[in-house]
Length: 436
Ligand code: ADP
Ligand code: MG
Image (cartoon, rainbow, N blue to C red; front, side):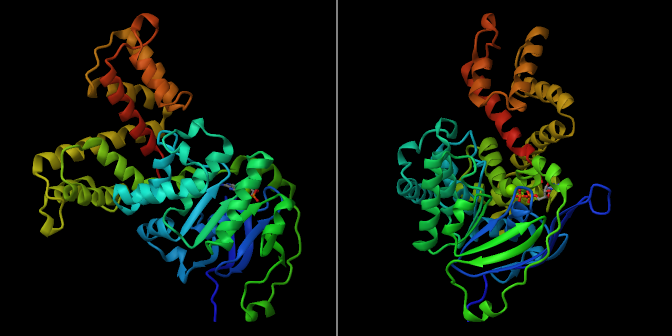
């Protein structure tokens, strides 16, 4: 008998529980989804579609109820199992793409493979194959900012598929696209479901999309109000116990609130980013170690970013021999690495706790770390540029240009190499700021 690959049982997600501004984003939703189904979650803005999708993905913890995916209750997974789940079991596509602007298209698609620690050649081959399939191979070495919306979404679909997960979740994937690009993306989804046999769950508020689905789940005010079948892929038993419609409750407060919370929270993004952070931080700080020494250090660093081990343990284990479960570095290197890691993380924390003060501390830290010789006026100018970047009002290249430009024309006049180093440090810290 075919078992559902996803079981959502009486899922409730309540924000600000018990307070006057309590919001029941999901109010007891149950759904069963079977392998290879194409499901659409449909309903007006603010009705809880995204919350349901993030509940299924494990990015949103239930207030009550259970979510079981491929036999595992998500709430009982460790953080590490959850990351593993995100890397290999599900692929996600969002309206806002969430591409990393400082990586090329190819590297963005490779990202989930970087997490798996696969070698460069394998990663690139699989990623290029997907880029070719979606007609964006020519964009491989470009940065996301130079792509059209439709191209960006195809990149993010390739990223979702690169580890070959069985389930794809998409939150309003064509919401930001013109009609031609939207059609193209919808065709790709259809193909992923029918040819690649992926279980597909797509959230939309556009009734024109409904024809694509095998089954439609209608939502309103946090409840499932109906289900409709276009093409039944479920086993017969499941047909018998079709779910009764729940009565509708209308709340205008929900509609007012909804606008603010369209996107993922920082926390949700943070969980997805941790393995990547470990990788970036490591390659940033280290250059001349062998692969084994880097590989085991990377795992230790992941544990550290997950806060499973503290700085002292990190330092000790880096120093320990391989055969004793360490990374086989020496004591000096282990200590200076740990110090450097901690001071970088401290900058990320201080920017998060108070951005205004954090920018000043951060600028001073950069001046010291890279021994920049700046007079009082230039320090102020430097701070202003760092602020621009921290507030995301310029990209990394914008910052680099400003650091590089001669003082006479308003730049900082750093050597090109120094400007590059400063920019790389800033980018790593910007990445680490997204913290769970
Ligand atoms: P949809 O995706 O259908 O537009 P959502 O699932 O994003 O709806 O949101 C459902 C409801 O939950 C909305 O009223 C929204 O304002 C509210 N909501 C979502 N996230 C939060 C949050 N972090 N805090 C408070 N309310 C939230
Ligand atoms: Mg939504």
